[in-house]
Image (cartoon, rainbow over all chains, first blue to last red; front, top):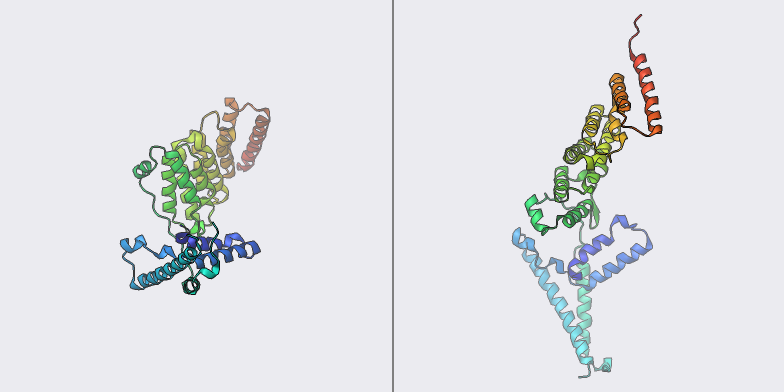
Length: 88
Length: 241
């Protein structure tokens, strides 16, 4: 859920209504940005608009493929790391 | 259960995890930054569809739609001025919400005190007309918004005939005991503003004679105004010399 909505959270955190120069809000923006770097950009995946408006492109599909490969590798690495440390 | 030490993890696995994490961060940084885009206000669904959506309990749905509509100007990362909204759709939404919850006052409050405050006379008039039409549907409950619309027409639009027509409808239709006397008296002071002293004097005299006003302070105030109206009427008449 968070991975799908992280871009909306990024936009909300940068809203001009939130006193963007306040250090609290600046720290929050940094935190959200960092979180966004660590999460896959799932809101670009399986968009209903691709079906209804037929606006999907091979570039978008390729980028999604790369994202899936990178995140799959990350999950595999983290899973193996955890597995090797278990006392079975 | 104690875990094995870090050294028990093969270097290739550590390298895979670190490399994948670094690639993920680089990939995320290289992605286009999300852009805030203002969405247009959609037209509301038809009343039967809304009723079906409410699952037989329309009031909570009306409240939800009200909150959604009120917050529509504030979208993620962007704020749209009310002025830029399509007022035909805003009006349609307000009407639908009132259909769902006819006793709710909030849509009329939004129309008269939020959407009618934009610096666009056409849009102001559209909202005031909407309030007027809906007021006629339930005048004894919706009179405060009609009174506000009359004041706006008088002081914001400087349209005395429009303010007077609102005030006359207010006096004619909002007649329940809970409606304060000042609401019915607005038309008298608007006639005075228009220079129609005789009409104002007749209406005010009639109001005092009817005995509808019981409060001594209010009676004293109205008698003072009546005397001022008589003086103004005399001074406005051409001299017979």
